[in-house]
Length: 141
Image (cartoon, rainbow, N blue to C red; front, side, top):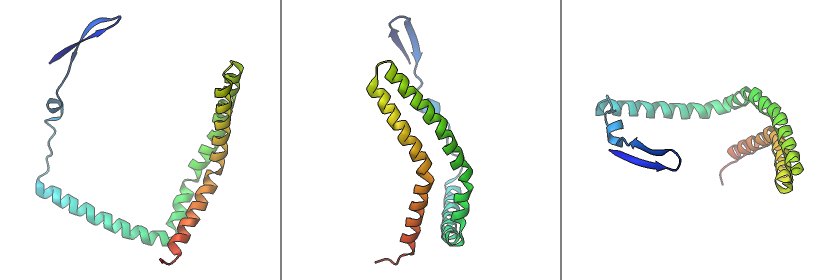
């Protein structure tokens, strides 16, 4: 099936449209229904074991290890936030210089808010984690 499109400067072009079923129709599953049921049961069992293990691992202090593993990434993002904020502030001053005062001031404001937010993000997450632990430890009412 062919369609022709009329573009303003380039003249006429022919575009071929491939039906969805012709393109994706031959990708059937090679698994039988019984194999699919077995895989589903296996995945359900593995998921339940993982959930039960995760509850025990949380008590064992795995959470602190995982949080500690992300420290280099957090430090990298905090380190990158300084040059990005610097470039955004310079861009804001350039916008003010070319006469777009409102856009420039908005750029300055959001660069400062973003930089401060990136510096405080780990502290905010520690507060949230401590609140979550306190909620888990408190008895249900």
